[in-house]
Length: 282
Picture 1 (cartoon, rainbow, N blue to C red):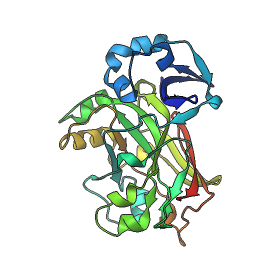
Picture 2 (cartoon, one colour):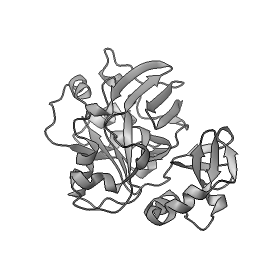
Picture 3 (tube, one colour):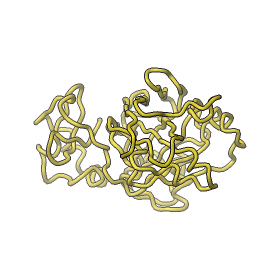
C-alpha cells in the first residue's frame, strides 16, 4: 500500500495512492487518525479499515502532495554508507556507523522547491532510501528490525557543503530549511520484502548523476535500526536517511553544484520519484 499526505486546497488529508487516484482516508473516516504519525502508531488496529476504503477519490494530478510526515519527531541520517561515495569523498572506509541529524524544519514536499541559501552557493544533492519507523522500540536486534519498519520513501539529503565541512559536526550543513524533501508517499514494508535490492538514482536537469543499488549499502537497514536503538528510543514516524552513493556534485572535478533553475529528480525502484527545483532564498 502507498499512503500519503496531500491537500486538495484545504487542510492536509491522509490518502491511499492507487494508480492515478488518491482515496481520501480523512474524508472517508475522519475520526480514524489526525495525521500520518497517528495513523502509523495505530496501524495494527487500523490497517484493515484503511484497506477497505474505496472513496472518495481525487485525481493524483489535481492535488498537491505534501511531505508524507509533516513534522517527524526525529530525522537521522547516516554518512559514508556506499563504498563509491566514501572513495570520492577521500575519507577512510568506515568501521562504525556515522550518524547526524537533520532538523524537522528541513522537511520539504516531494515536488516542492529547494532553497539556494542566502549564505552559501555550495548546494548539493544526495538521493537516499528513507526508512519510516513503525513502532516504538529500544535495543532492537538486527533480526527483528524489520518488525519496527512501517515503510519506505525516496529522499534527498540536500547538503550545503561549506557549512557541512566547516566543522567535524555535519548537522548545520544538512539542516537548512527545505533540505529534506521526501516522498512522494510511503510504500508500506509488506510491498518491499528486501530493501537491499532496489535500484536508486538521481538526475539533474535530466542528466544522470547517481546510479546504484541498495545492495551496495555498507551498513544495511537492519543494522542501522539496531545500532540507533542502542542509544535512543525509535518512535513511529521517525525517519532514517540510509546513505547516498557516488556521483555527488561536490566530488566532481570541477565541482558541479546546484544552481537556481536546476531540477533534481531522485528515483528508487518500487518507491517512485521526487522532483524538486532550486530557487533562490529571499
